[in-house]
Image 1: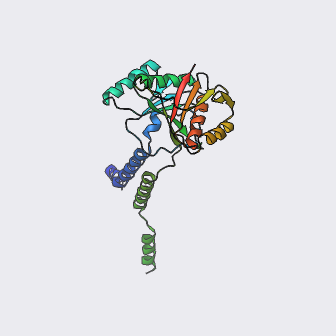
Image 2 (image 1 turned 135 degrees about the vertical axis):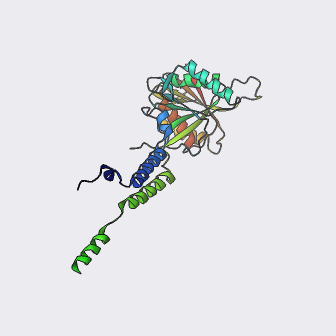
Image 3 (image 1 turned 60 degrees about the vertical axis):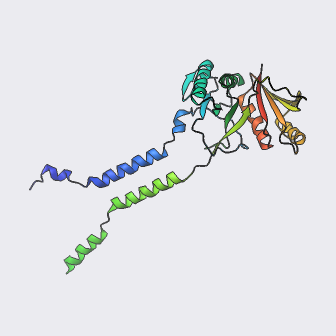
Length: 139
Length: 135
């Protein structure tokens, strides 16, 4: 006797949904948002003596400078004037507080490209900046 | 009797894998979320001199001046290698970690060289580091 088509579909879906939710939780928990906004092609210089980054300020602004001197924020290219304008706006929105700016410069970038970013920070009234570096080279 | 035993053996062999996989995923999630990956990045603090004209120091402070050039370094206008710079800085700043260090960077110098110098100052415990760009 042939089975009714509904009988084929009457499997236990609960277990499948359980596993699907587990996978969603796994990928949501493991995705690193910071990695998506910073340029992974930048080769950071080594600084084995630097203190490891333990605390993160949610206001931190990461500015990438690649080896050709191109400035990027969240992977979007900007000129140094535009960077200055963006930083001024961020400082104004935060009540003229000192915003932590971290420059992720490629180790082969010329200093004048980094200087443009530092000048943009100065124009926005930011005097304390940080340079990102690697404590050890992975893989 | 023999048929009944055979049926019991088959029932004992059946395992509900779904629950086991669920628990395995739960454990995997728990360990992935609670484990902290080793930090490989570091942030080197520097100060940019503020154009504050109200401050008028009565005596000029003693400042160590390191110049980062394209393919070389100088300490107070004397050419040095990285190892020499480490030895000289270690000797000069022995005991005084508040010594101000001014790092001048040539515009055509490599950013990696500046980070190396900053890392060296960090290793020696020097805190008052300022970076200035020179043309």
